[in-house]
Amino acid sequence: MNLPRRKLVVEDLTLGHWSRRSESFSVACDGLGFDVAENEFVAIVGPSGCGKTTFLTALAGLVPVSSGRLELNGKQIEGPAPDRSLVFQQASLFPWRNVVANIEFGLKAQKRLDAHGRARVAELVELVGLAGKEDTYPRELSGGMSQRVNLARALATDPDLLLLDEPFSALDAQTRELMQEELTRIWQADSAGSGKTAVFVTHDVPEAVFLADRVAVFSSGPAHLVEMVDIDLPRPRSRETKKSPEFQSLHDYILGLVMNQIQPGRRAIDHDSNAPAVG
Ligand SMILES: Nc1ncnc2c1ncn2[C@@H]1O[C@H](COP(=O)(O)OP(=O)(O)OP(=O)(O)O)[C@@H](O)[C@H]1O
Ligand SMILES: [Mg+2]
Figure 1 (spheres, helix red, strand yellow):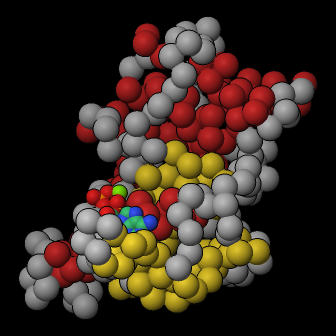
Figure 2 (tube, protein in one colour):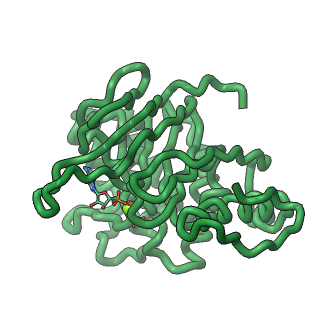
């Protein structure tokens, strides 16, 4: 990819806080560094508890930077702002608002719910496959549908940076696969979005490889970058992509890197003898 890698700059980043319980400085990320380019989709994988959510929360401006650089478009991230949207595992929709009112929420809060805003919401309802469900309330939606609303709500404000923390992990396996396919489709079709840069945290290595342009492998906590792996699989990607030897090889390589953080020295199952050796 020939895009400049400087939209998001993470440099020698430390995130920590004083823990009263242990009376010590608890560190979630230490010496973390990488760049993300405009329109790039970066997935983060790493051991449980290594600091992925803390990092994403810092990108959202909800956790202060202890030291190092965390910059979006050349400006240090210092707090929450409408240029970033955060999507969590649980859809957290407003139960008293219908689908459209939930999707409109961010635009309304930003006083941008004009004719253009309403057209954008209508377009997103179509895009996430919820046409006909506009007046439905969250209690009548399945988990997959709720997460579609959640995604549409995050996209409605056209954020410069979309932050997703295991957004599909509460879904059943089949719905999860469908949502992955939907997300790549939405990502490609959503030309109205001003910027389509995303940071996506997941435990699921196939999901990371399927969705991302690059996969960042985090170390066991406190997290630093073990390796940034280029996912040079062609787009558009489909279910067939997951069956290709290239996909399998990238999957095995990344899984090996993660397993090595969890149990140093141990290799992941070697499906493909051509897979690069685990570092
Ligand atoms: N602001 C903070 N500064 C320092 N440490 C923090 C902060 N917030 C949380 N932590 C600690 O950082 C560690 C990492 O937690 P975090 O939730 O980020 O991990 P994670 O990689 O998202 O884990 P999981 O994969 O299980 O979701 C935890 O021990 C947590 O208590
Ligand atoms: Mg987490």
